[in-house]
Length: 94
Image (cartoon, rainbow, N blue to C red):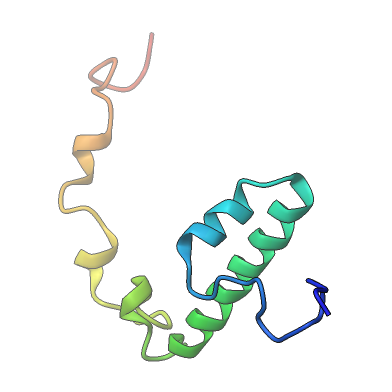
């Protein structure tokens, strides 16, 4: 026996260990790519379970599909404060 590859399910894998993931993300380039892909797929699987187009997903600060919430929610109360002062009184240079 003594074979490290394929000798048992989960053998040599530190399940649930953040240290193992951190080691994988800081290893050689190929291992980094594999671990980055695994982390991404884990995030996709987790967020897919809580995502809802209409109701939203408060855990990831998503309000759901667009719903008009009034003009005050989509505009500034005093937009003139963002404009520069006029160069001339009439707007003409001559």
